[in-house]
Structures are given as structure tokens and as C-alpha cells.
Image (cartoon, rainbow over all chains, first blue to last red; front, top):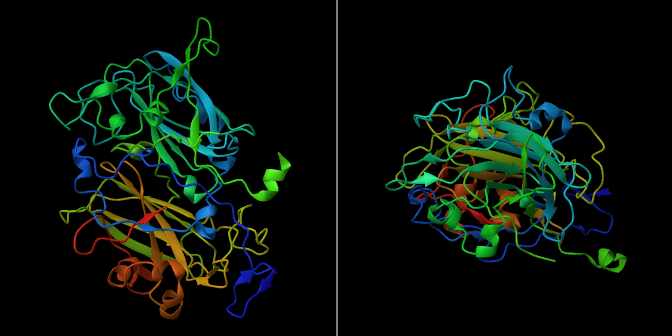
Length: 251
Length: 189
């Protein structure tokens, strides 16, 4: 390392060898302006976006460690004295990048309704009961293989004001960091066979059908625990890095 | 190899159950010598404040370094140990947010050019199916801003939306307008 005339810390070669993150294919993510979801109207940029190169600030990101998370944070059914109402479920999977590489040691945050379709939030007015034994919030850190596992309650559906008789399909919100600013993702996990999915503008805002299906968890009889809980597998795929020549020769 | 990613979905109105942390707005603890506070409000296309938004920031330390394995310049040798680089603040009922941090250093761009001190920002809210990404630049860096490759790629008449405004001792203002005459520049990441 050397310090340049401008006081910058630069590598001796003067070059920065940075990972290159791939940009998403068209149709993979939803458009910011989506009239079927009415609240997008006043909340999407109207001017063209400016291409941001992936340099130091973009290829790095917060590595939020285990100090934030305890084992108990991944079990949403044991955060109170009593057990919550509803169907106990296990939600598990791996965080991968689009090259199939696991993303280890990354923070996952989740939030959801209780079994009755009610969020514990002051602005929530759906007339369904709160559950004194369920907050609906969790955190976990992926292990060295990118794996995570939550124990929670099957969330309920709830009405929302987007259009007449609008109901959200049951879902769990997921927030992920990956290892770079480019990989930050907030998404929702849905359940297979939910009859509300074809009617939901938020789910259907994703143009690419195959990408949309990535948001539906898969029921797993293998991980279902006899006499105890159903299991759903939800793998999450973040942006991948282009293989460097060095890595290429390593394969 | 598949390039198909898990799609983005909105954070919705109830992210506040989980995502805000008490220490979130503090990239450094309040009272840290040299700390600056960035305040702002988030506005929608009707000019109304967005009271259910989430602002996240990511930046280099004052030496222009990242405590991250993909910074090819290696481990950060000296101490901003209480410096997280990351800030997170939900907007209040009046659309306001604040981040307490240290001003980042300039960065090498990798081709001999230099990036002016900047903070990357993600904006989330109900009604946003994906985050919107912008950058905060600093008003006391006119020369560095003039030479910044990213800022210079922005149409000249819109650059000012990315430069914070002095708002008192140690305070900078950075309002974010999703639409309208003063629409903030957002980036395709």
C-alpha cells in the first residue's frame, strides 16, 4: 500500500482488483412503477436512473456479526412465557449467490403476521386478534454453508386497501445483506398452493415467471418433524460475482 | 449456473417491527469527536412526507478505508473501532431521518481518478417494490466533486440533488424527493 499525493491509500500497482457483480436480467426484479400496486404511483423515480459503477463502496457492505443475534432470535415460538397459537412451522434454506456459492455469516431479518393475519404494529388496524405469545420478528446468521433455520408460526392472510376485496397471500418478509452493497435484498417468502397468489399485485409485479416462483417456498416432508412441525425450504439467491481469471483456472 | 435472483419485494408498512435498531442511526456513537449529523426528509411525488420509509447508509471511514475482505487494500490498520460504516433510520411521522457519522475519506476509483467523499444510500418504503439507491456528497468538497467520476456522469442540472446542504454546526441536510422538480438522482446499481 502507498499513500498518494492526494492522501489516498492505493495499492502499489495503482490498480484496484475488485469483484464484479452481475447486474440483474430484465424482468427479474419488479418495476418501480407498477399501477396495479397503487402506492407505487407517487413513490417511484420518474427520471431515468443513472448507471452506478461497482467500485469500492458498492462491492463492500456491512458485515453484521453474531453480536447482534442470539440463538433464541431464530425461534419465534419461544420468545414469551406461553406458546403462540397456530401451526408451528420450520423455515429453512440456504443463501446463495447466482453462481451457486453459499453466502456465509450474513444477517437475515424476518417479520410476519401471527396465525390470525395480524401484525404487531401500532398502525395495524385489521380486526384480528393479537397473540400475546407472538411478536412475529426474528433474526439469524447463516452458517459457513450459507444455511439458516427459523422456527415460527404459519402466518395468516390479511386484507389491505389496494383494491376492492384485496387480501395479501400469507408471507414472511425477509431482509438480507449478503456481503456487498450490491447484494442487499428485501423480499417476501410465499407458501405453495396459496389461492391468493394469482390475485396479488405485489407478487405478480415480478415480470419473469421463473423469478416469481423463486419467492415460493417448497414444502419439505424430509425436514418436517414428526408430531411437531411442518417444514418449508426457502433458498434465497443474491447477485453473483463474475468469475475472475484466477478463479477460472482454479476450477 | 443460473443468473435468476430472488426478486425484490416491498418492505411494506410493518418493517418497523424488526428493522429499526436503537443504535441504527449511529454509524458512530453520539458525541464521537468530529461526528456529523445528516438530517433530511423523505418526500413523495405529491410533495407529502413519507412517514413509513427506511433509510440505510454505507460508507468508507475517514481514511477512505473499508473493514471488509473485498477492499483489496487489506485490513484497516488503525482505529475507528466504534465506526460501523452502516446506518439505518426509519422516517418519523414528519418524514424525517437522521444519521450520526464521520465524514468518509476520498477513494481511489481504480483508473487514476478519485471518488469524492460520498455515502451510498438505500431508500425503502411501502409502495417501493425495490429499493432506490442514491448518494450523498459533501458541500465542502467542490473540487473533489468536480472530479468525481460518478457525479460527473450525472446530468449537470441534477447534480445538486446529490450534494448535502450545510445546516448548522456539524449538521448537514439531505432531503430525498422521489419525484417532482427536485427529484433526487437515483442510480441503477
